[in-house]
Length: 252
Image (cartoon, rainbow, N blue to C red; front, side, top):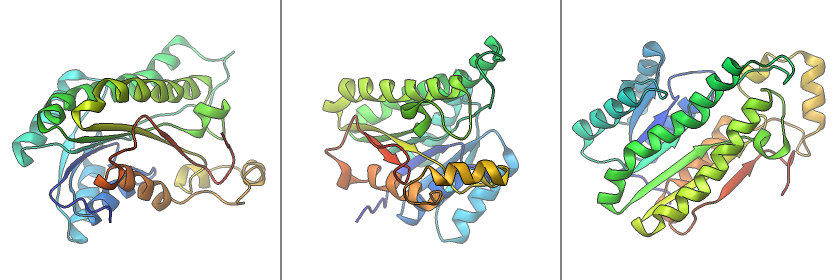
């Protein structure tokens, strides 16, 4: 199940070893998809490409700034030139900042929204014509538990707001393009066992863990596996949905 053979997937923010993008890209590749590793970090891009190739997968790297329409359009064109189609887009690229509303600046808000929401919009818009022409596509957007509970471990109110905007955008788009064979879904991870989490002071880390019914952070593989399902043909009748992956720290 969840086989992605002959599928082409773009995964933004998949060049960093600190987040979950690289694991998402490698997981989709294991299921048979050809991966476009898209990131701003050239060294990280090639590290991910090599990791995929070492496990027997197919991947190319594209340097992209998701806040630039020209850069995003170039990413999509390179994907089409190499593979001739785009089946899956995972909008994973994102940034955070821990700052109070009192200390926040308009530059802070703009920077976070530019990546987390406007960059997601540009990438999504850029693949729609191809997916509509194919009458097939899977778009999976990364939100956050912070969007639903109003804050979490990392990030200020602008981060929570940008990730909440992702949920509303995804639901609306799902209504717009459902008849084109394209699904649009979101995942909202909670605390995930990454280098960012490991950098927390021990006292802060304990408070967070104590608030999670399952008593542990999530693993990157658990996020990636859910995305692989939403990207698959088996998820063909799921759209406009948001999947919480948080060990019970937030329950709807």
